Image (tube, rainbow, N blue to C red):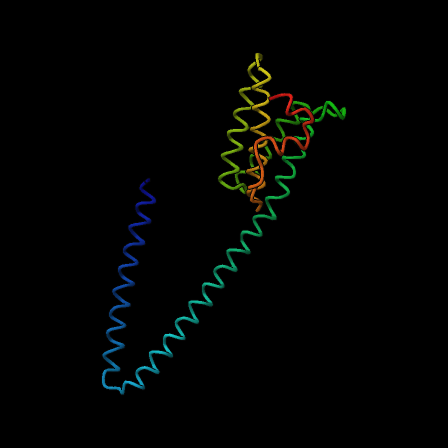
Length: 194
């Protein structure tokens, strides 16, 4: 654990101890103030205070969850166009020769630069890590002239892992997929390549 995390934990521990001490003193003072009251009145006061505390906690928790959900939804709305650009670009790269629209090296460099900037800001940790692996694998493959068909197939599986990470980041569960299920949507002879 790095020093910053340890310092944060230490500060939180101190704050927690201070709050517990203050709470203990307030409770003690509260009960000493009501020592001489009749048990019925004291029970009514305790029930009223408990009801108020539970109500306040419920409202605060509801607001917290609502705010958290709104933030997640706003992030999701920002991520989706970025991920759509990614998929659109890669489909052009993968299917460009079939549709007669090859992607130039300049276009690739431009795309990678812009996409990486957007991904750093809006991508989840999982997508960023997956993209790093994906990009590194493709760069190594591009620099190796003796690429085998097995390595090319593995690169497609890396692409599929990236797609699954993106789907997970926008809220999909991805529980029904096995390796190659997404690739079958746009690679006709995937089973022959295995």
